Length: 157
Length: 204
Image: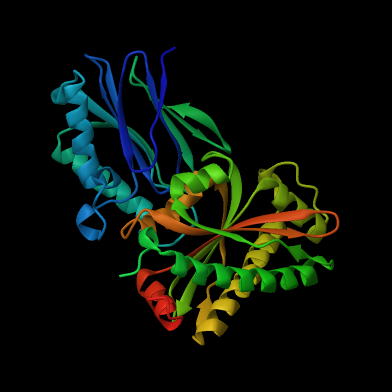
C-alpha cells in the first residue's frame, strides 16, 4: 500500500505507483482521473465549473474543466508520464437537488468530455449524473478508479 | 463591488446583526413548532471557504440534510440549511415520533417535515432582512438532499464560484430544557443583491 494523496475542490494532484489519489464528496463537481499505464503515473483533477471564460473570478485555473485538465496533463508529463499514453475515467456531475433542465453537473461533464477530446485523451469509463454524491479515487499501480457513495455499493471502473 | 471574499469588519457586523434578529425570530418559530420554550446563544457568523465548511460539519463525507431555498423579489440569492444527524434525529422524534436509526430511513413525511422546518427558519431570517431593508423578498419551495456534506456544498460553491471562493455561514444553537438543536445556515445573496443590502444599511 502506498500513500493516499487527497485532492480538495478546485485542485489537482499527480501520483506514481504505488500511491493512490482520492477526492471526497463530489456533487456537481467532476473528478477527472488520468492514467499512463506504461509509466504508471496517475492524476486526479477535481473541477467545480465548466468554463473559465464565463467566470469573473479566474485566479485559480484548477477550478475549471477547460483549464484544469491541461495543467494536469503537463504535471503528469513532468512526473514521467507521456501524453500519448494517457487514458481517462470520470465521475461526478450529479444533480444533488433534483433541478430540471441542464444542470451545472451536466455542463461540467460536457465540458470535461470536450476537453478530453481536444487533448486526444480517450475516455474509458464514466460514472456521472443522477442525484447522489461520490468519493472517487485512482490507484497508480493499475489505474483502477473506485467510486463510493453513501447509499450504494462501491464500484470499480 | 462588494464580494464575500473581501468583507470588512463593519460589513460583517451588518450580517451579524441580521443573524441575531433572524435567530431570535427562528427561536420563537421553533418554540411554536416544538411546543416548548426555546433559548438561543448568540449565533456565530463567518465568511469561509467551502472546504472549511465541510470540516466544521464533520468532514466532506459526513452525511447531513441540506435544505435549499431561493430568494426572489428585490433581493435574489439562496439559503441553505445544513442539519447534522443528531439534530435531524431529534427534530423528527419530537415532530413525528419517528425513531430514526439511519438517514436512509427518513420517511417521505419526515422529509416534508424537515423541509417545512427549513421553510419556517428561512422565513425568520428573510423576515429580519426584509423588515430591516424595507424590501420585498419571497422564498421558493424548499428542495432537500440527504447526502455527503461536501457533495451538497458543491451546488452553492458552483453558483457562487464564478465570483469568489468564500461563503457566509451562520452557526446557531437553540436549546430547550431537554435538547439542543444545532443548525448551520448559508446565506447567499447574489453579488448585486449583496450590494443593495450593504448600501441600504449604510455599509458601503
